[in-house]
Image (cartoon, rainbow, N blue to C red; front, side):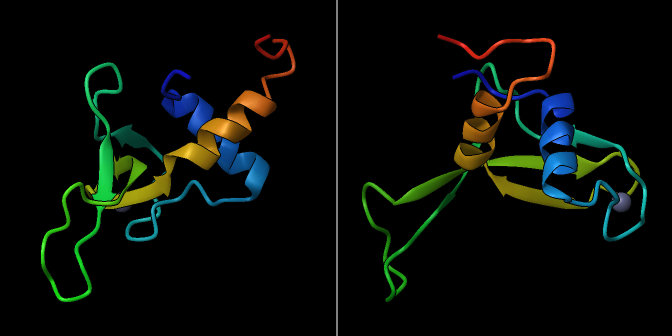
Length: 96
Ligand SMILES: [Zn+2]
C-alpha cells in the first residue's frame, strides 16, 4: 500500500468532516513532514515505568505541518490508508 499524497489526505479529511484549517493560525495549506518513499514517522511507546521497550510498540502516523506557522498535526496512518484503499476517487476503480 503506497503512502497517500497530501491531496489524498485532504480527500480523507473532507469525507470525514475534518477541518483542513490549521488550529493555530487558520491557514489551510499542509506539507508532509516525512518523505514517504524513504521514511515515515511513528509514535513509539515506553514501558509504564519509563523504561525503553525493545522492540518499542509503535503507531505509524501521517505527520503534516502548516505551511504558514509550522504547527504539526498527526493522524494514524493505517486507518487513513485503509479508507483511501476502500474509497478510491470516483474516476478510479479499487485495486484488485
Ligand atoms: Zn498554522
